[in-house]
Image 1 (cartoon, one colour):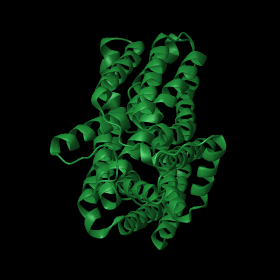
Image 2 (tube, one colour):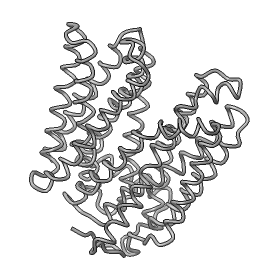
Image 3 (tube, helix red, strand yellow):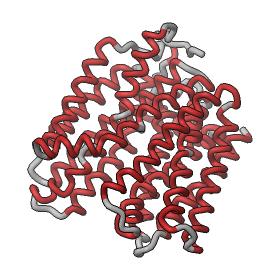
Image 4 (cartoon, one colour):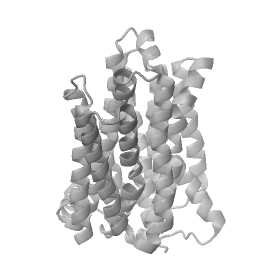
Length: 400
């Protein structure tokens, strides 16, 4: 179960302490955005800007988060995981503090990119740490557990942000992120290095590019990585499209929208726990394929529902719930499979996986916005296409 490393997970206390810190690190991606979503109109009003320009801070964050991983992955393969994580947390704190003090939209956008560059180090390297300590199905099981815990962040994030906004102002939300970063930095004080010096790869820029090129040429790695990436395209289309679909098109209240959106996250949590129990019995390839088949079926169901106006809102909610829940069978297993095929370049592999995921996410959410036409078709078609592309790459991964 345990990979060769300078630290072993051979007691429950160590296992739980590792789980706690990794959960905090992986949650940075969610809390950085979910916490301040309720404050977007307030920020726009306070800075005398339109809401659209404030929403661009989300896109800027995703771009920084996606590209920053390419830097942190190889760095951690050379110098270990702990030091780059600490540097990432410091950047996250600086970016959050900058947002709290910002007096204009461009300055918030700038500091959001800084914040993203720090946060992505925590996410990409926490995945690499799992690969340092666990192999195969055990890695998939650990990732499933982490993603279940992670799912709580977007579930409660907007509510926590709303509560902070109720008692204070939008700057207090970013101050809270500074505090979270500081507490996580404190937790890293006793966190061990998990990558043994003998497994580190000393590379210059040419070597880094060669490593990425070798991973791209690795068909087994690409099968897993693109399975995860394609599915993320549909997930971000879901995130971008459901506010319009539920609130504007079907006229549900913002409160009910929160419940409907939260149901998908509950589905992810349930599926992750099912995956954690079944993966050691059936293996990652079979569960990825099952998840991809279910996702493709849900995509077809969504198209059929919209085309024939079969079930209205209830049909849409059901189809999206099934699609989103497939995250629990696809993503953790695909990441574990990709990392296991990357040999010693785990950090670089984890970074490349993240680029595929968030790059596809930017693309999927962008398509929903570009083709918005007052109907549900843009969201549904992007989700369905991503599901079928996911199935294709899941088949490729299964063959290898």
